[in-house]
Image 1 (cartoon, rainbow, N blue to C red):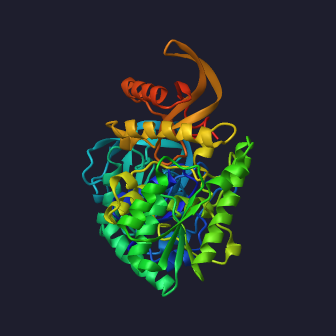
Image 2 (image 1 turned 135 degrees about the vertical axis):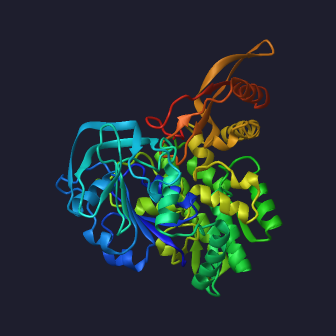
Image 3 (image 1 turned 180 degrees about the horizontal axis):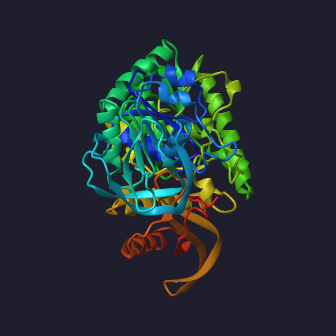
Amino acid sequence: MQKDTVIILDFGSQYNQLIARRVRECNVYCALMPYNTALSKIKAMNPRAIILSGGPSSVHKKGSPKCSKEVFELGVPVLGICYGMQLMGYLLGGKVGKSSRREYGHTELIIDKRERFFSGCSRKEKVWMSHGDQVIILPEGFNKLAHTKNSKIASIYNPEKKIYGVQFHPEVVHTPKGMKIFKNFLYEVSGIRPTWTMKSFIKEAIKDIRFQVKKEGVVLGLSGGVDSSVTAVLLHKAIGKRLHCIFVDNGLLRKDEKHNVIKTFKGHFHMDLRVADAEDIFLKRLKGVIDPEKKRKIIGREFIRVFEEDAKRIGKIKFLAQGTLYPDVIESSAVKGAPSSTIKTHHNVGGLPKKMGFSLIEPLKDLFKDEVRRLGKELGLSDEMVYRQPFPGPGLAVRIIGDITKERLDILREADSIVQEEMLGYEFFKTIWQSFAVLLPVKSVGVMGDKRTYENVLALRVVTSSDAMTADWAKIPYDILGKISNRIINEVKGVNRVVYDISSKPPSTIEWE
């Protein structure tokens, strides 16, 4: 896809994806790449600008991440953020030393030189700092742009080479003028036009899909979630009836899920949609299985088997489409210092084995989640579909603690439906990442109609998050919580108690299993 591109070199910052999101919010395309990406690859991408992210290391530490000095000789504007600025100073002949006092949190930035990089900013601005080192002697050709009480040099620039550095983090919301600074760097310094829009993406994506697929067919596992739904509509727009969608009904889905998927994709969009009714098979395999990891593996294996059988019935298909998003690409390609421990198998069980012989097509691999939602709106998907909350691949199986049975699934399905209905009326619903019920493996004593009951307990889980890496429990109004609880207890047979989960991630996870 031909477009103005900004390359962000990742030096391990916890904010690396946030930098990319801010650039995209300026309607400029960017690619986040490991710090040690070969110079030849960077040149091949013909970037209009380069951004060096922050990072936890010190430029003086042995083995600390460093890019090639030639990055600064490519003739394109460069912006170094925090560690990126320190590395810039270090590589270009300046001096980096320990700060006499570390700066973490809100700091007042004092702008010493009015320059287009800080256009629209006041002489004093609030910024967010997080550093222990700082540039103490400027490299040749550089000037100081700003300082703070504890950092004599908090921003630098080389006017001739259009190289800029900031000791603070403009990408976080705690730097109020951060977006203005990004726009100044991208538009004014780098001369990039804000042309990265969903309309332009659709046009280029359709061209790319047609070029890759040619006259071949594509098969897609359609779950009804946002990513697979947007992938399906985009592919259908590009290749029409040569897209074959398979919806696997494993019996672990939300209420009316199959009906809604058929109505939307077969009825409204007129797609070739095949439904694999496999509830009995999945429930048989899951009978008596308590361990959550075993549940996931069984569901994953069975999904692949059912999908493979249905795909064979279509005939010879060359391509498999998946709704892979940019954060998945980043996580799989980034250079990590140490392997991560497995907390739990990933919820997305739709990853299909290479032995099936498909070539992969991932039309959303350049997009973040918010961009996928905007794309869905542009393609004509309803708000109800576009703003659906994430739903785990193993479905309700990871929201039933203990044995999976048809009876327990039906109880949870009805309760979950009530949760969704009531949360849709919440004024700040779009700020909620997920809201759902969990069926616990305990029963409690209750009183209904003057009679003693001994029924199931449900936990209500509502969280806010931007990327699911961290999450906080939502402080939703008591009257909404009360209405949800009252409706579940009165309308769902088999439940007499509802509790609210007030744990954050970390240390807890969003899902219970």
